[in-house]
Length: 152
Image (cartoon, rainbow, N blue to C red; front, top):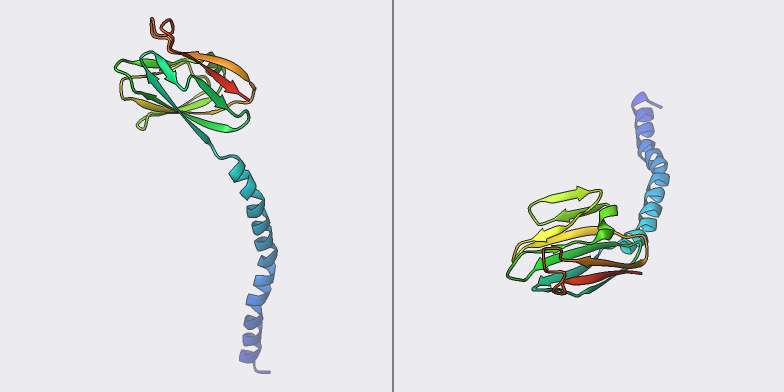
């Protein structure tokens, strides 16, 4: 067989050998992607909207699933500033964003919003229970601006 014919036959079989070597990699990749699909669906973040007005939170009871990511969207629809203060959040990592600034924190003291302001808090609560929150601006809690985080 001429040298050029022998060389041609080696190159002709190389792509098949390379494809056979890649086959286990493709199978592994497909298996991984299929196994991750239910996990991605299960970890979808629940979005809960909370309005602040004079002198109430709506809803005043926020139901949250334990061990699931949640995003609280706080909106101040009142005429004066309001705060969201939940002692539970002082022990948990959280991400707070107002669309301009994003803060990742190991503990959240409170979120203060001016009229028309909006902020999001991304949380992952592990412990079931009922936990209080309030607007801690002077006189607001006393006027009834309180609520409960009901983690189930």
